[in-house]
Amino acid sequence: MRIKNPIQYAFAASLFCASIACNNGKSGKTSGDTTQTVAAKAVPGSPIKYDSSKRYIFLTWDDSPQPPGTVNCKLVFQSEGIKATFFSVGFNQVGPFKKRLIDSIRNEYPEFLLANHSFSHGFQDKYSKFYSPSMTDSALGDFLRNERELKIPVKIIRLPGNNTWASNGNIQGQKSNTPIVKKLDSMGYKIIGWDLEWGQQARMKAPKESVDEMIKKINQRFEDGNTNQQNAIVILSHDRLFEKPQYVDSLRRFIQILKEDKRNVFETIDHYPSVQQK
Picture 1 (cartoon, rainbow, N blue to C red):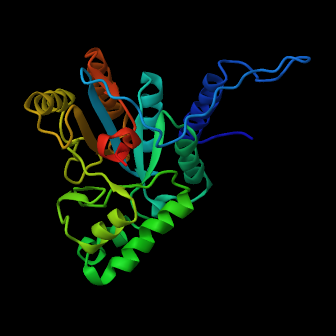
Picture 2 (picture 1 turned 120 degrees about the horizontal axis):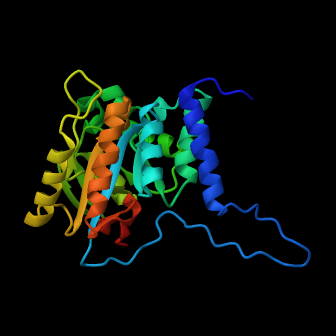
Picture 3 (picture 1 turned 180 degrees about the vertical axis):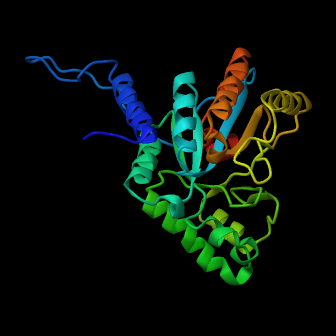
């Protein structure tokens, strides 16, 4: 099949490269009576051991699938060898290409983690309605539908338009007393907010802060201990901000500068401290 769309071409190339990397360039076939040992595939949610001398960075990108931004972000993360989490919206998964894009995120763990950002993005941004007590059952159904249709492998949620954290009855943040938050927490879901946002310019699909501004803010948060969990920072941004080449370059430079500090470790959000707590 000939691929004419350049976005689809880049996406297909990334899938091919990922498959080669997983097999280390080998076909995985056996020869004669020799049995090849295959390493066990990492399972989302498996705990890690923390190193207190490190600074853990959780890149969490919202609203996928939003090509070409989602594709661009994935390619940058892959080429730089770092981990990231995509909080995805089922309402955005329209057509076979976007479905394959979501499938690729889900299937490329442990580099990428697919997490839940509701099916409708809060009834299509109608937050006052979405979080009202009378709509609790409908909002819950929206999250469960997203989990089911996207085959999300973890019980990790980011509330649309709402910076709330919840884990094992410990609830804090914006609108933390709303019934849907308490309901999700009682069902064992972990709700993830954010420490720092790489925001969007008004009326533009472009990052608001420069790379240098973001690096400075991250270092300051770590130095001040001003994060939700010690030695861990959750950074929020959106796939759509990185559609144009100049902003893709900014994302790459952002990651490369962070990688220069050997204290920094990139992880997926299933390894966030409050998520790992049982």
